[in-house]
Image (cartoon, rainbow, N blue to C red):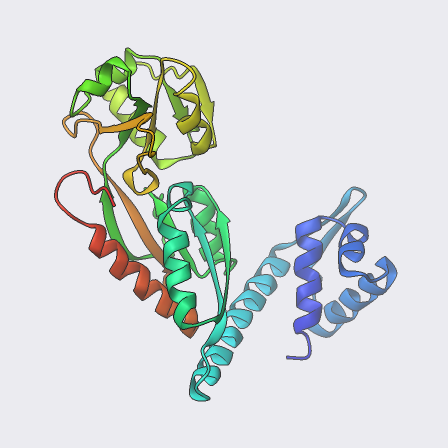
Length: 305
């Protein structure tokens, strides 16, 4: 326990890449920070940093030490949460890495619902792509991940899956708006705005296009689904999103239609945690609530919320 603060400083140095920058962030002098880390290294019997003229970086021993610290910190948070439950309190902190699609509607509703019963619980919500989210689970930076089409790292434990079909987003007067279902060829023949390749929606579209020997050539490629939704109102173009992130505007300006599953199969919106990890009480109970809410949304057809 007495080394936890030094471990926290080591994590800050690793993140910053230099003693000077980390010392400024931690409000401590660089020399004092370096002495503190050197003392720990002397006690451990090995260095944790590779020191170069351009800065510092963790060596393999340092990587192992930092992993131990993050696991210890996670276990301590879990114990503190369990002790709070014993005293009749419901406190704690939930950290979540998630896809953009769950931000506008689903996640705010779920967090507000949880905090209505457990007002002492706080949240950190980080928007991450599918690879980043899994990495945050692996290094204990997030308790939970809610992402579309994750890459499935070995340490990812699936808690629930909600099938989601890819939908076309377009202005109500777009020629394709009259159809109830859109073929992929019609999408590719239209001007389209697409998510960046790091996102699951784009992965499904790219894979389906390659199977048909077609090129996916968006007029705009972006990491922002908000930009996609708004831009299609300014040009005769279409965009793509999954239904959990869609809600028809009151003015009827936007419409959404599913892409045919003959061309693009449904993907999975997946709730997960680090495999083998015992979550703090607050995170475990929020995960249970999310799983139940996703189950409620599951229905034949589009899976629209």
